[in-house]
Length: 360
Image (cartoon, rainbow, N blue to C red; front, side, top):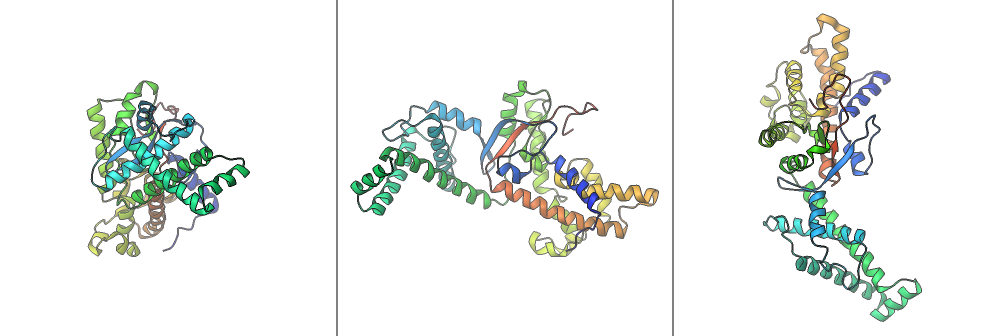
């Protein structure tokens, strides 16, 4: 599969252009870092986990945590609020995923303090037994810890956090990795946005806008929800998503990977013009719609003037290679999103010089 050969300066400019339109690169998000930007984004909430077509926000976990502070998670000794919260988040995620696997959707507040206590103590007993086996006896373990200026309580506290975090993160990654698609229904994101609407002077966006998922501050809740739902459906089902677009432009190597038949790969004659028309309506994801391929199109059109044709064979050869590269990059970004839990909701940058809101 060849790559488009462009001058180094043109390639650098194209990549900068593509980076600018992606709200937050998933790879950077996974590291908890922000890309350089003229208008730093303000974090409003975080998507902790997606279960089926539901989104669990950090604010929801915080709210439930505050309502359950009386739960005895500490096993006989009080932990600090920060450690307590970390443990609770991991337990909540683990219990939720286990219940989903069992076929029972956990409703808000579905896990009682007693259930959480039992879950924590069972895991703690298992790791304590591992310590005893390693040292040979409980007394020997205490002696060794005393030499290390530690205590049973300190060991238990570290074990709680380490074991629960490991279990929760591994379970989360496995479950999201097994998802066929990133099942995002904007209902909870929309509800959360409407709850804090007064905090916005501009539109709001989230990292999931990598999938071209804008959130606007105007409109009735029902209408906004319907519009967002349609956008999510388009991303998953529209025939011009990046993978199918790459295959439809003659990517024979992608046929097995995408399941497209030869007929399907040939059903978009004059693909470039159709692609441009659909891109203008927002039916193609951001990495493709605003990526280097579109920049190459504009450059070629300026060079050729009135003689430029989107269905010219040479133009298609150049664009096909570029679109293939972008399609694989798009798949990579989506895979990263599925494999990590740090997806944020952001306040969009201020209006531009023309007075237009981002995403319009």
